[in-house]
Length: 198
Image 1: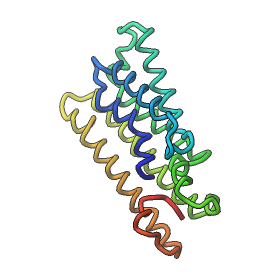
Image 2: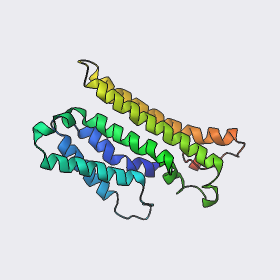
Image 3: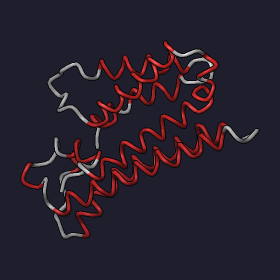
Image 4: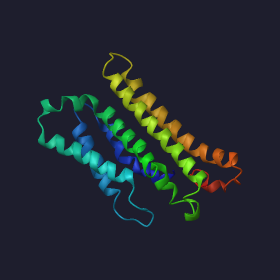
């Protein structure tokens, strides 16, 4: 996962940064707009990914809910919007393990086609996808806990989730080379070390 995969997270980052009990509707609208803009074809755009579809579906549903439902019907969403968004990402990412792992969709654009079905390539992307899914699941749990306590909400809503995401990016950069070394595969050139190629 490199810069292209990070770009897929942009709508979710916008939502996490902007969303609050009084602004989640604007956050979901902005995230939906960002997701749609990211679909505009460019020379390095690549193929449509699961994350792209999930972003449009999730933020589209939130935006519609904000437009058609009364505020008293949405109090639970105001309180748990960040936990719900993290939980939705966890479901999408972990669910992809049953089909094509989330990270593999990006890795295929940086790896030769002949290795896509190799056991090592599959192993690397299953592990990376599992780690990302668990990060989002734990972030969702922390968001729920934050609504049940009177103090430490900044740690639960922001500091710990950000630390987990940074850790996931570092693991994504580190693990593929470790798996390749353990399998006796020669190291790749440094310029491509952040990909999940095998």
